[in-house]
Image (cartoon, rainbow, N blue to C red; front, side, top):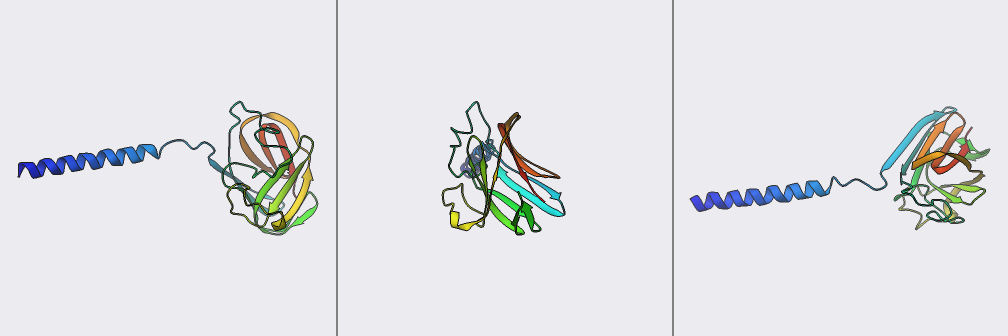
Length: 171
């Protein structure tokens, strides 16, 4: 009987240690946590869900995020852009819906892309044929943002990371 109690105690101890190890392993901070922003612009509810990477002392645009290549405009899963109503983005119509949001940065202009495939990992399976809309915008210098952040205001939204802001007009 004493042996049975000892075996149960050892088994319970082993289970508790295993449970603690698994729980501890899951509390590791995420490198590029998901974030989102939502607001109403001219009657349309706009939502942007994205992975928020950090600069970490790196040169971001032109190196970490290469010029001239499609970028998921965030980290990990592609950024997702949703509008509840039809809107004009830089003067061009974007129907209500949910889109994968991508960008092609260069030193002087950025191509902003709304792709019909909203849920995808990175830009690995990005297909230009699925683009719903492409517009060109000009980045501007800004105050330092260690983490990538999107901001929505009455004129549209902006992608802000490192010392750069990429404003996109919405009507």
